[in-house]
Length: 163
Image (cartoon, rainbow, N blue to C red; front, side, top):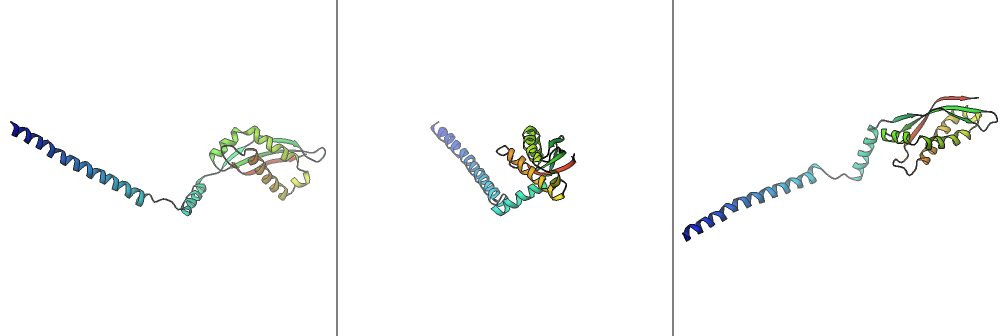
């Protein structure tokens, strides 16, 4: 009987050896596959590649336009007022939604800029272009420190009456 016990124990030890070898081979294969993926398939981006990738991503994003209700303000000229409708161009859909969430803040930033204008300046193309840039700056400054930096990329004047 002692011989059968030893034979049985020897059989158990020899049956564990192939399992241990198979596990070791699987672990080596998994490690080799992971190394291949990280070193060959997914190469780390260089700063130039990262910049190019970011530029392509920005190029793919479509601008969003957010229309505002009319603004009516007194101009600096005595007895003159301005009625204007503005549409804000944002960098992305998220920026457009962000702008919609802060309509009172945007209107509060726009009104002083509009009120500081004169009829003579607003009647020129250069005056309108300068006003558009001033509005972009004022709105982005008012929204500074929020979740999206400089959400407004442009302002379009879609309606304007000076009386």
